[in-house]
Figure (tube, helix red, strand yellow):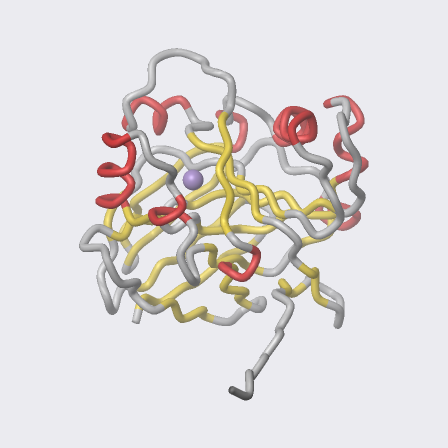
Length: 230
Ligand code: MN
C-alpha cells in the first residue's frame, strides 16, 4: 500500500506573536480545588495526582475566535472543566517551587473535556482514564499569554458560562496546589520540557454539555475562551 502521512505538529497561538507554541505533552492535575475535590468524592488535602492527554488532543482557539468541538463518540455525559493552563518555556528535572516561575512561559484558558460516564466506569473498575480524558479535541485551549506580559496569575476569578448561564465559578487562590508547586511536583516524575502544557485543575460546578451549546470560559487577566459544541 501507499501510506499517506499528514504529519501536523500541534501548536497553540501565542498572544502578540506570529509564532505558535509547539505542544510537546499535556499533563493534567486532578482535584485541585477543594470544592470540586469534594464533589468528586475526595476528603481532605491529598498529594496531587496527574494524568495525561495526547499532544494532538488540543483544540487551539485563536484570540477572539470561537472553537468548534465535535461532540465525541462513546459518551452521553460530556463534561466541561474550566482550568488555567501553564505553558512550560524552559525544561528541567526537579524544579524547586520557589524558582518554578522561571520555567513558565505563559498561561492560557483551557477546557479539560471529560467523558464523565466512561470515567466513572473506569474508576469503578480501577482502569486507566485515557478513554475518558484523552480523546480527540478533549483539550480546547485559548491563546497563550506570555508571563512577560501578564505576570504569574495566582488569584482572580475563573469562571465558565454555558449558553450565558454561569456553571463554574472559583478563584485561582483556591487552588490546593499552586502552579509553581505543581511544576515542582510534576518535575520530580518527568523531565519537563519547553512545549509542555499543564492543566491545573477545575473549580466546582462541572456538568454536562450538549450539541449546540456555547461554552465561554474566562480567567482574570487571561481574557476569554469560546467553544461551540457541534
Ligand atoms: Mn480537570
